[in-house]
Image (cartoon, rainbow, N blue to C red; front, side, top):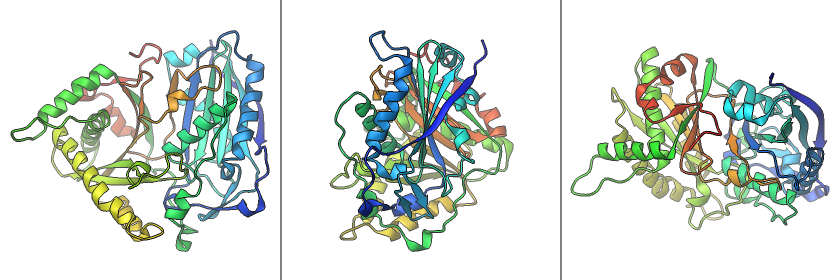
Length: 440
């Protein structure tokens, strides 16, 4: 059976209540200004619902009406960005695409091809991955399968939301669809703490890598992560005390970094390698920032090595040490300025992205965000994924459905991926793109 997706309709969904005049201009934060004009992507897959749930024909109507309702709360998402400084909250709306898949959901879950998964995202409604000033800030595609299953694909303009903010939005939308009350998000936390800078208004950051890249999915089961953590802990240097146990994310990140670096060095000149670990600033501030704060509230810290081969035990130790230094150094510096945060510390920290003489890798963890709780009234998603990352050497980690394993989406140069995906050490712990329904 051919797997085709047919577009049924495309429309702009406007907020149910017009945005008041005094809220028409929404300033983004300094951290938002420093993010590339790209779209973050998520796809939620749902099994066929029980007979008492809404029929397929009524589900898009429910999605659109609940979306309109929450856009009144998340009103900047219905606007258009102005330069690199603010959003014109003109209520032009979010783009909503309705589609039908001429196949069964099981065909996708049994063979989740990254190329075909793109069909569940409204990519045809943007000029490119570059979110220019005319681009909508939120685009959604609802696709229903012949079996009654569904996929909801979302494109978030990255200047409006990081992973935590995306989770806040999808949770609110799902709650509204179930008829529950939704609390307003904290929209002003970022712009208040990190005011935008005039000199960055016309900043033009890269939107993709120049090299050809390849994206692959690697799944680490709960049991294989347990084995990996034991292996890494056994390599950790310690004196007269039990070695610190690596977290799931630390162990998987260290292994991927090691194997990706080996692959790169097999194809090009050896040079120092850097792993950039992303950190959610909301939970690191004292007191913590509201969990539903929107925008980008992420910091990074680097772990660097010039060793011929990365020692995973040492890498995990450096990741733990780096997080402590990040919390006690960078985060404290951010909070030194009364009434706001230190822009000097932020701009200084951004220099870690400008090391041209090092091979740089970045890991972003979406683990523990409640993406698998997004129930629109027909059950929780059976699978959540991301696809189509525009930059090389990026890893996105998500919880597997059972919460104990990790799915890693890895983007490398084509020639590096060809080596990476065959690395025996990696394959000792990870399965390459296994069927979703058979994952344990």
